[in-house]
Image (cartoon, rainbow, N blue to C red; front, side):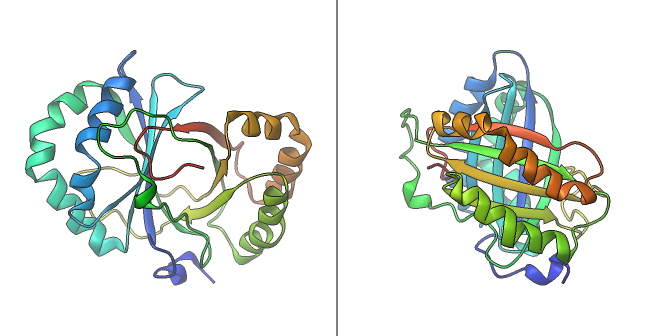
Length: 247
């Protein structure tokens, strides 16, 4: 079974994982602007702002995710938002914080039910500055070839239950969406087969305890080794005040 058979089984069958490199000291300015102006305005045109985060190991990296029901909805939503009044009013301020915004992976749930389902009702009200609980581990596994059923079965039936037993609260598994980018105004990284795992922990202490038991993480990587083209890329992410994805 190939990834394109999985569409329609998760709330967001298409997601973008977006990593922005920012000018030094500009992350908090972008987060304040984003949480104030770019959440409801995107969702009003059919997109889902799934979560936005500080990378705690890189002070100049802002990471966020948005989801779509399908590629057609993505095209229409992006056109409406980036051609609309909110982006028009604030794009200059947003772009001034950024060095690069083209590090984007277009993904789809790795199997039916594998996607994350952020609860918008759990999102703080506009203006909130309280830090929500939880930490997110986002690991990108770079594959030699697009994910096959053997790899996905291993992740679903072996790796995922093992991580749950180790204290991971919520998991999401995604693979590269093979459909060409249908909104070329916003580049994405095409032609790169990946498997992406999101793991939500109760707090930083729980994530650090998981890190201290490196044997589990090493065992998981060893299991996936035959499919890997190079070393995984890992990000430890702290939700912003208005992220819908948190513990």
